[in-house]
Image 1 (cartoon, rainbow, N blue to C red):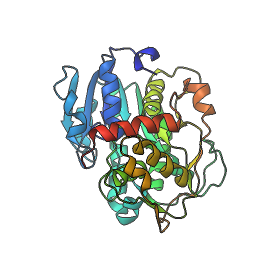
Image 2 (cartoon, rainbow, N blue to C red; image 1 turned 60 degrees about the vertical axis):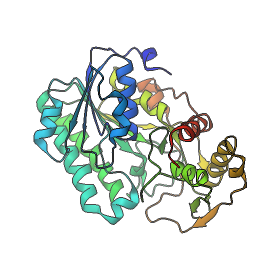
Image 3 (tube, one colour; image 1 turned 180 degrees about the horizontal axis):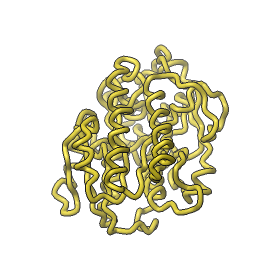
Image 4 (cartoon, one colour; image 1 turned 180 degrees about the vertical axis):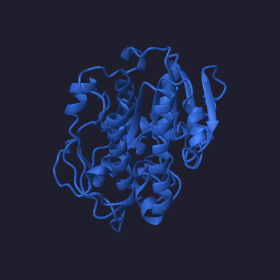
Length: 333
């Protein structure tokens, strides 16, 4: 679904924190295509200039290289902004286990800085990337927003604290906030390199290099893989939300289908084999289960459907085909 069909006012000035990252850069492109004024705040710790290179010279685009741990920079970025789409964070469960202090500093202290800056700048609404990791050890499927368990990683703790802070700022300072609990987002611009790369781009890169991808565990773990265009839609819907009780709450952002890692790796292999038949002959390897991993993840998206009019267009297979085509065209190998 194109952003124009959602009737977003092109006069809005929108700040995207983490806008040089995978999700943020895709959101920026969609907003610029809609005619919005877009500002990005990113310290380029995990985001990359190449993700926003095509839009750096756009007349409606403004890039601030800075860190959300710096309150003064946050204030500068929020000046004359209507809406904030807060994507900046240090992602990855394993990263947070290896370095919980930095994850907390960015994801909690940085988040609080942004809330304060938005409050003082009288931003209309603060929309932030929450996480399905908040469900922790809850075994309930599908995941429903008001039923969570205990966090299983430092990363999950930081994302839950974000929700608590947003709730308190809504009640204490009369701010409007919306949290979007992303479920395993994938798609164009997602980096396949590095120790903390997500599973889909990692599988793609391994296959394209004619190497065996490694599945953590026996492949039975499952995820609600969510294509990037569905996430863009959710963010725009969050800006547009006007129904009673649609703000100062959190929503699952997913498609609402579950895919095992074994099913996923076969799909990735088959889609890539259409470009390179040799990939179809590559064997799969299995390794150790990662600490902090949730066994199964499946979202109920009924709340977002009802209160945000969220209607995701891309199921996992359709999105995966699009992602694989993008990687085949753009990935260095």
